[in-house]
Image 1 (cartoon, helix red, strand yellow):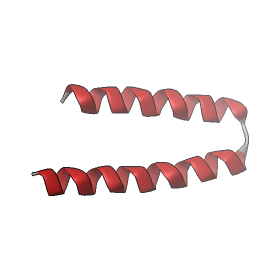
Image 2: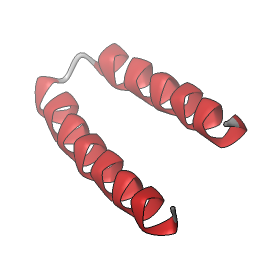
Image 3: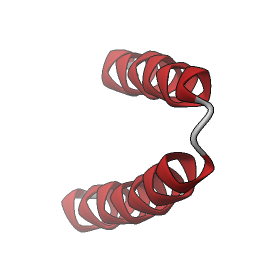
Length: 49
């Protein structure tokens, strides 16, 4: 569970940093990457289970 908490904190920090740039294109691209990453992580957790 500690890993998940770290990931959440890490993601929030990055998301905040992106929002502070106030660049919609960057935010859209980042969101897309984040969704892809979350999907990959979920798949690897399912395979490990």
